[in-house]
Image (cartoon, rainbow, N blue to C red; front, top):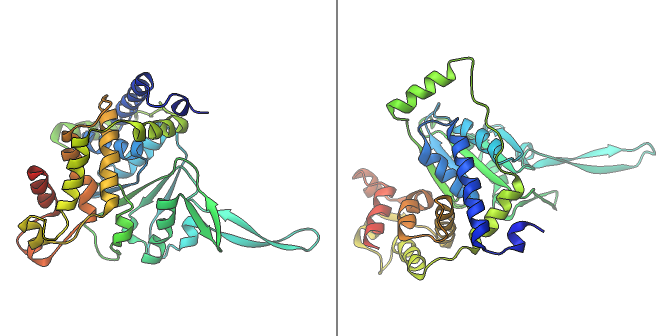
Length: 330
């Protein structure tokens, strides 16, 4: 039985968990320069048990972040390069017909790359809708069905997908149902001048830092259990509820929401914001989330669960603008 299960929500275990997360954060930051916010949000999502969508221009270390995080957390990982001709079986696996020595034929299931603890789907929007949908069941139910037979995935199981927002030719926008299964959309921006200097110095020499594992997969599972046991104040719960509900067009929504928003977050957005707030508190060494955690996480947790109308786009109003404006009111 794991330590988290035998000591439910003890302060000493929470302190140990926070220390492990601090070491993981520091180890990843030795490889990923100038993207501390991205690193923190990625760890927050994983500690919450969720999936991450990384959006950014080429060359901003999105792939390196995924590979480094897997190593530091001690997780097995696979990578799928998404292309238009990628088929669902290339991700899930398939059954093959085999014949034994006696001539008896039977089907044997050959697992695909999804059977790992850390799956990277690189440039996910280049895969066809049919292939994208192959991940829906895996991301929500932690199992896949092949030829009508369910196959359980490892625990923990996380999908970290990357998306290039620039090259849109030959891409397929992710459907709303799949976007909703990502806990966060993390936008990866260009590093500042000092960070970029560190990048070019460290990556153009023969010496490079090799990250080491500072946690095990069981550590991560135990911390994920702990996050769900952390207390959360009524004021924080109500702020999450009011924020998400205020983003939905209707008689109780602010006028600017009714004017610009066509599609708003559902209950999965509230759940994600609740878990992410607890995880962010633990990552910061606290046992309870505060209102500041909700404000800081509202945009990455909710922005990909919303869509604006043509009027908003024509006037240069973004989803982040709407969320931040509502958050200030709440």
